[in-house]
Amino acid sequence: MKQLLGLLFVIGSIVLGVWLGVFVMFIGGIIQFIQACQVNPVNGYGITIGVLKFLSSGLIGWLTFGILFSFGAVLLDSK
Image (cartoon, rainbow, N blue to C red):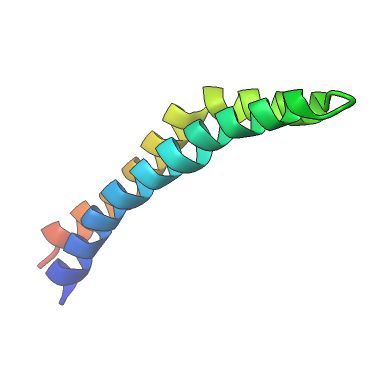
């Protein structure tokens, strides 16, 4: 049972890391930046958050992957 749960954590870490890092942060940051620039008057807060999401996308994706993968690896290694 622990091995199955560990395997699910490992697979989930890959899926969640890619989803959160690429789709939510990277693509979402670009979309938020573009939408904030098109508003009249220009929304400076939206631009800032969009740029920060874009810049931190790799870090957030890797942290999500690393934390969940470490839990899965511990469960896979336990007897």
